[in-house]
Length: 102
Image (tube, rainbow, N blue to C red; front, side):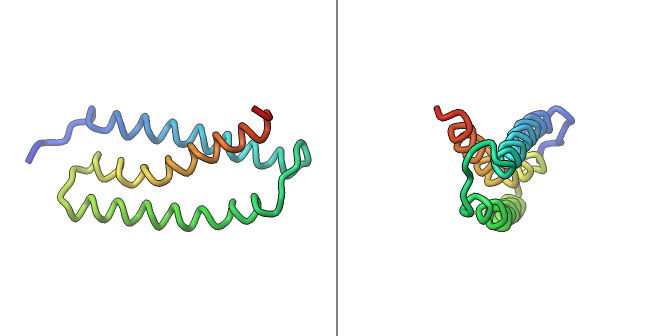
């Protein structure tokens, strides 16, 4: 078994930073839509609530699988972030298109 060094956490830290930046953009775009800057239907409000539960469950499941498989702590962190990152990335892309019309 290899010893984990601080450099092993560089990739998970960068991934978390990117995910957090996208999450902030999603929050801002949703708030602007709710404030009436562009039309945002009830489906978006429902999606805000329901997707958090499913993404959290997927994240926990991925982390558990990676941990039980004997992966290193940085690999478990990356596995846990993957479902969350996919959601923030797709939401940011979708809302950015809706806000800009592009």
